[in-house]
Length: 118
Image 1 (cartoon, rainbow, N blue to C red):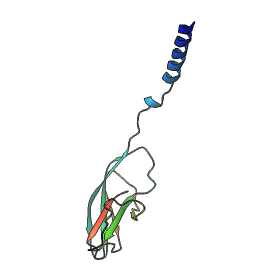
Image 2 (image 1 turned 90 degrees about the vertical axis):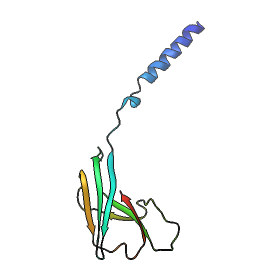
Image 3 (image 1 turned 180 degrees about the vertical axis):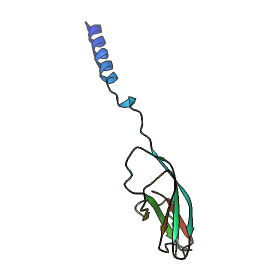
Image 4 (image 1 turned 120 degrees about the vertical axis):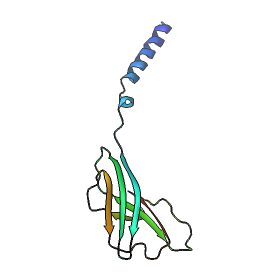
């Protein structure tokens, strides 16, 4: 009788976990973007990001995030986030190169400028 109970419990346990399908779902595709060189001037800065894949989730906004420092200012944040400064592009994100010209001098004499796509 004890063996029957063990077999029955094991069978129910196996049936319960084999019915779960979450581990069988295929992952969705992901957004694949990277930073391209920027082109600063005295009146504007042109930022560029490259897109290899758009993913399967809606893109609500895109652009770059950045931090900028004057010479002698310590504790540089080399990996800016959306909590830092943002420049939001006003075009739809598409495959290939996406450029946006920002008509403000955000570099303004700063020696260190770190940015990445968002």
